[in-house]
Length: 410
Image (cartoon, rainbow, N blue to C red):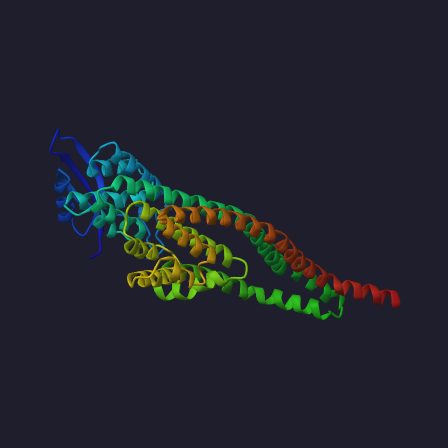
């Protein structure tokens, strides 16, 4: 059922304080029902009208998501308030007021209303799968049954904070190569559209016979008039399609294996996937989640279909009585060191701590690999840039050399 945005005015049943705000719901009666469940008396409920410059444009699949950093802050604040003894509803209300991310604040308002209406916290989160990842939803569900929600939220906050730090390291290492690539692309486009035509007119006026490299460069320059708009349209259309379908199972089954087989980035993607798998599994085992249930959750949160399939196979093998490390060693996506360390953890009864050590190891491996990737790509891109720009300059000046040689002969 589609939802609309409503503005409301209400007063509290205790004290009569006035409250104004907005809420998404299927109808105005649903808004009034939610307000009453929150202990408020609705005075006015009206749909929000957005027209002209105030109209909010929403394209399906392109709405801004909630950042992992925002989820980490939310989980940390909620765990702190729960540890301080606040009831869940009161803690959710306080965290919602302090949240700066607008989409997360809107979602938490709905979650608060659902919990107020009698739903469990995990069930309320599960209604917003585009905001809260499966790992978080399942951790909350297990912790509700075990009575350790505050500790669970603290573990979630630590995990998300580590993932944010890891992403920042990788992005930082890739910033310079991406900037160089963009500058190179702009330089080539400018030369093709503005510099090459000037030389072409000069060559025509001189009546010079053009060598093959120059003729090829001029032909490419002519084609840029229609190739460039086509590339822009294709890039925009591809970006929209990717934003809408990148999480589809059919797309991920084709893309995720390619991520692990890329010549330069494949090893880095594999290490990131292993680090995430080990860290999440360690968190769930430390929280007291049974092994088979933890593997089911970690597999869903792996963010790579290859790793998810391998984890599901390990889980299936364990359900038939096998150990954890034996089937783990049979999958190429997991290096032998991971299986050996897991075996040691099983034998010593400290599998959770061992998986945490694996996560630490691969976090450092990712950091080292990102630095090495940046160091190796930088000179390579400089060489490629020099070859492309230098080749274009040579192709433009070759006719001049021929004209100079002809003038000397005459």
